[in-house]
Image (cartoon, rainbow, N blue to C red; front, side, top):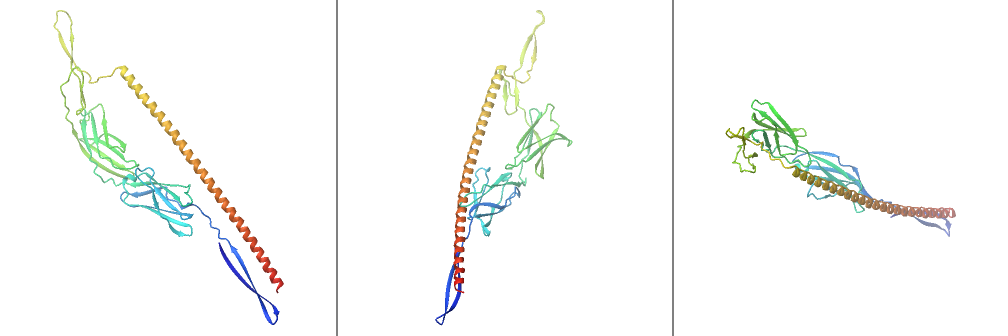
Length: 365
């Protein structure tokens, strides 16, 4: 509270040869109304922000509040990240700015959300800002493209080094090319590191593979030759089928069937080669389907329970936050009413003193 003293000199008539001077000191009390509250945004951060990979990210905000606010920046969906409290700089009375800086940003931040929250000694703002950070990837790494024929040249397996892209999507398109350069087959996928392309006809005429890596408007092409795998055919072990993991070929034993036309004819031996498949019995398939169905049902139930728990927790947090805001609003209203009463009392005192002053002036012209 600040008070100002106002002194007025009133001169009366001649009394015993002297002038009578009457000093009247009037004190006028003024109230400095200072409102305190949680901070709020003046200049909100952008909803999206593009930054080149390897450069520095800077995010500036402006806010108001009393007492002095503090900006809290965090990456809620990035594992291992911790919140960063950035001190604010005063621009004007009760107006501040804060700048968040992240040097040499890497690809793991692509597509991530940067959350900004304001707070001070009274509490935190209910308004939270979210910025989607798009890191523009360079795609300058060695992708190590490799391709080879498998399973008797009926499939081509293509592998490469997948680029780190955070939560962003990188498109990988694979094109199989023949000796003449014609595109025999193509396929694409996102955020993968290998692709196997098969068909019933052979890929014996495929000699080259082209990989196109695309991120937003940036694309880079890589080519590699298709190498042939050596298919091993180990001796079968009757009566069970053997599986060669290195060549991915199933070898079945050769069965001999005796056919007899007439009692006088000789026995002829016919060699029958199996199809290379060993189907399971119907009971085995039924048991497998039942187990698969049971696992799916259990997973669905767990997802439903988890969803219910998350909804209940969010409702509880929202209810607690609402009660806190209601309590703060009540306290602010009480504080305001108290200030209003004090203001009225000050006005009453001022009016009283002014009346006394006017009365003194009338009695002593």
